[in-house]
Image 1: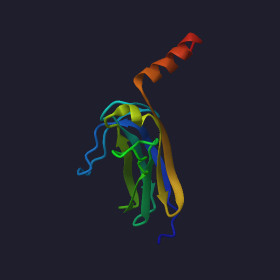
Image 2: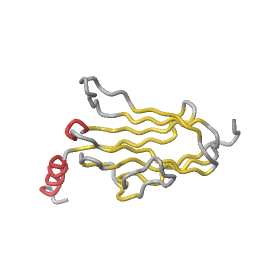
Image 3: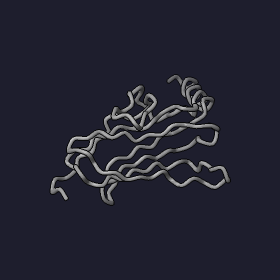
Length: 144
């Protein structure tokens, strides 16, 4: 194990172009936001830069807002592990909205961990489009 202390920074968080997990390229960054409209196939997440952690085990987790599976049971968080590929590595963690979009509304928390320590996290608020306009109208009525 490396004696260097890992350095993890979130470079970009928000909306991205469609990610091809077979490609070595990261998705294209489109918009910085934590408010995500519940639209089918919209891609959101973050890109983290991980330094001084080559060959360390990186765990990732996406906590969904009580999304039911086909049997009606709540889906468990999406988790995985991999090894950091280099001492200066960029990693994309993200997800998309799929049909039906109304049950994807809520808080989506995404985390990266090295060992037992969470080193990067971001929470996205997925909402129906009419909810976003209600919030905007609320603030407009107050002069903002």
